[in-house]
Length: 267
Image (cartoon, rainbow, N blue to C red; front, side, top):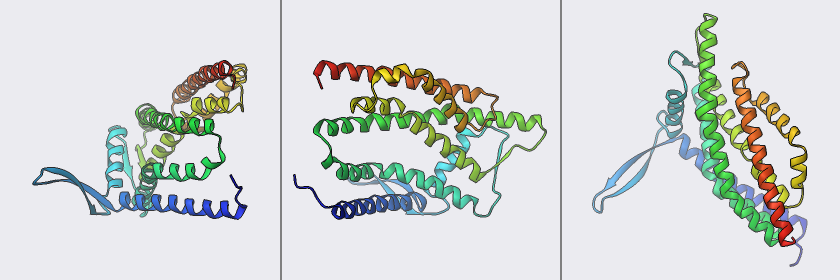
């Protein structure tokens, strides 16, 4: 295969980045400026999702309302401090959802750019990692949504009542807290997969992961201290730290299996 000049790679990269950004932009508009209703077409009785232009009742607004009703305990009031809080909150939710919606195309563009420079076994490994990465991200976000976020707001309400102050939180702070925790935990749950890939590519040996497990546990609790708001008396920090430590141990076991298979195959 003839090696292409550097300028050709740069032009290709710019083109693929442009396609990925256009996809995210279109997804952002569809989430930020449209609501959706299900309509039946008779005949033949097919259900069709119809987009309807709407800013005040868009899909992003519906998602924010869902988070408010699902995670905020009774007694906590969501307020707006700045006139732009509702707009910025909807924009942040829309961007988060747009990236998720556009992710298949973004991943395809990334894959099309890097795959020509990979060996066949490296291509197979990365292809096999896409679905586990998505599942792990979903599990991490669900962990944040179902466990971390409700506990944080319950402690927030508890301390507000103890100090005899009104338990209020700004809409933008609420959305930022939700997104930051779901994103950080979704990425953190990639730990075992990243460890396995590094071992598969012979960058880090399984014995190294096993030898430095104490550092892995320490890093897990340091991560917990960083992402936790620190208002739960150590409960959330401990929960995240133990969860991340368990994920590290899973990564160690998975990398040991990969290392053993490579030794048996002589690769």
